[in-house]
Image (tube, rainbow, N blue to C red):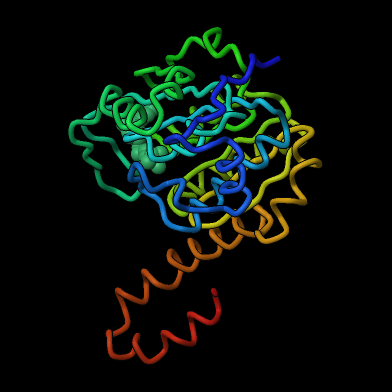
Length: 279
Ligand SMILES: C[S@@+](CC[C@H](N)C(=O)[O-])C[C@H]1O[C@@H](n2cnc3c(N)ncnc32)[C@H](O)[C@@H]1O
């Protein structure tokens, strides 16, 4: 059972909550204008659609995020009266490994800087945020008192980290909730392994490939209650995962050997034909 919604009839830069509701219903991307976020338009539309779905599952709802950086993917929940609690988990290492094969640097990455960004939007909204400066696996889950309806994983982009983050979300979240991921084009092998694990355990779930590089698992009741809404303009998650597997096989068995064996002039000539095979 969630707590009371925090009272903010004028919750967002002096605007009424009705005004916010209209913006959310219209998928108005200006909701992301105040703090920069490492995301594209398709992601932002997907995140607002997930927010609508969270409200449909439970009002008020709670939101949990792993990897918050500046607060760019929190700002839309901060100003939502229907969001009663935000959990932000971020270990804030100076640099982090990544399955793209390089380290990513995050200068001056601090919880205080994030909170200041969020205070600039809504000082009262920040009262509903609980921050953990830790890896998700190190969080004491008894502190997650309001089981989140929506979890968002955008921390370290390596297979072991994503799998570990998912396990934490699975334990912490509402059994009828949603667990979403960012940068699915990078972390899809972890998502595939998670999907296989859920299937093997005969857990009730569905997956949806949303816009940008956002992917979501809908658990329990949400797999029936929310799935049709999200799927109307998106793709089944399984289709996305098999496309990624085909692309990876193509890379291993055709593109890499071709690069080594076939001169570049010949590669350019036959490239359109191969491309049509995998697209
Ligand atoms: C891609 S950024 C998050 C961007 C943010 N979600 C947005 O859209 O604006 C990744 C964040 O993950 C955090 N991070 C790195 N390793 C982590 C870990 N093991 N656990 C939790 N967070 C981690 C980093 O400190 C960084 O703030």
